Structures are given as C-alpha cells and as structure tokens.
Image 1: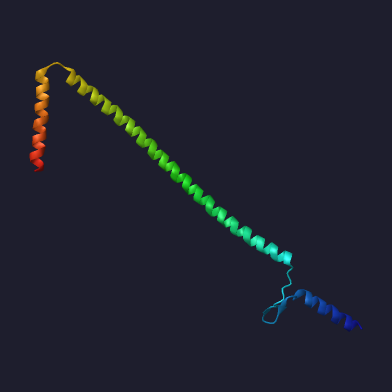
Image 2: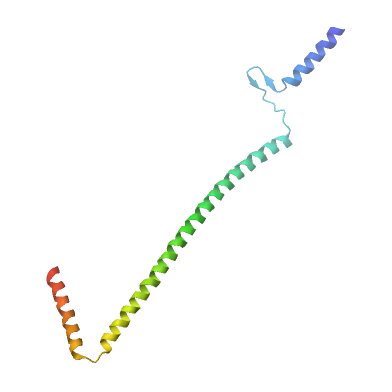
Length: 126
C-alpha cells in the first residue's frame, strides 16, 4: 500500500510539473483561461502602444528641435533685414541731400556720370 500511495503521489507530481506538455511539444488544449489570454493580449497591446508612444515622443522632439533651428534662422534674417534697412535708409537720405541741393552743376555731373556708367555697362555686355 505504501508503494501504491507513493505511485499516486508520483503521478500527481509529474502531472503538475508537465501539465500541458506532450512528447514533441505543447498539448493542443490550452491550460490558460480566457482571462489569462485576455491579459496576455492586453500586455502585448500595451507593449505595442508603449513602442509607438516612444516613437512619437522622439518624433516630436525632432520636430521641436527643427522648429527651434528655423526660429533662430528667422531671427537672424530679421536682424539682417533691419540692418540692411538702416543702411538703405541712410543711402536714401544721402540721395535726398544730393537732389535737394540747388546746384545745377552738381546735378548735371551726377546725370552725366549715370549715363556714362549705363553706356559703359551696355557696351561691355554687348
């Protein structure tokens, strides 16, 4: 009887250890409950979502960096435009001073210089 009881314990222990495993692989009948299967599916879905969130996080970080670079470039261009506007307004002020002078001789010299420059450029490009 002792042998029979040991033999029964042996079988129950063996069944507990190798439940679901047959020779050559896993038994077709699953030992998982539908709740456990749903939990596994949810875990896989959460892992997939985490991966997608991480990708989106990296992507938004890259977009933010690109926007910052463009903002810095636009700021530099705005500063350059302000500088050139200042230079251009100074040049215009000088032209106004030249044209406001009542000296006909100066005006004639200026017009003749422009005509000569235009003709020179015309003949050089022809």
